[in-house]
Length: 164
Image (cartoon, rainbow, N blue to C red; front, side, top):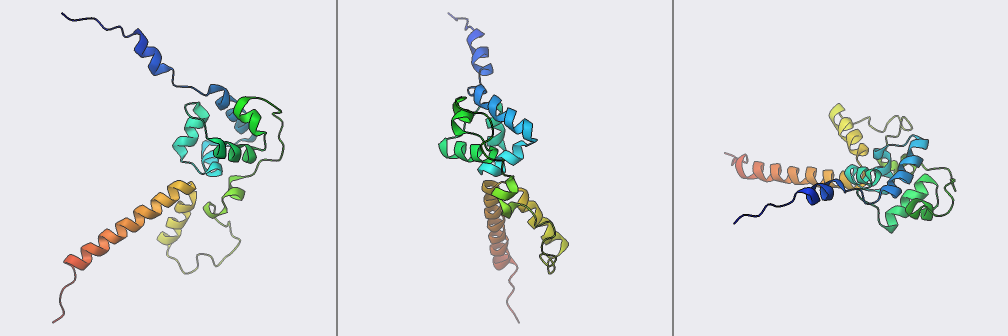
C-alpha cells in the first residue's frame, strides 16, 4: 500500500529561507544610502563575497565580532543594526574599504616605482590579488603556492636529466 505524501509543507520550507530579513533591510538601507556594494561589505568585514551577499539577503546574520565591524564601518550603532533598537543616525562617517584594508587596494600612483621591476603579468597578478577579500586572497595565495610545489616536484622528478 502506498501513501500519498503532501508536498504543501515542502514548498513553504524551501521558500522560507530569509531568517534575518529585518537585519538585512537595515543593512541594505544604510549601504544603499552610501552607495556601497556587497564587495565593499565583504572587504570591510573580512568575509567572502558569498557570505556578504547572504547578509544582504537575510539568509545569514554575522556573529558579534563581524556585526561590530560592520556597524563601525557603516558608522551606525551596533544595537540598531543588529536589533533595530537605538539610533539609526550615523555615529561616525563610514570608513571606506580601502581605509580598513589598504593591502587590497592599489596605491593609485603614490609610489611610481612600486612595480618598476615587474613584468606586465606580475603587475596584473598583484592587482588581481588585491581585489580579493582578505580570506579569499589568503586562499588564492595558498592555492598558488600549492600549484607551484606540484610543478616543482614534477620537474624535479621528470625533467631533471643527469648531466653527461
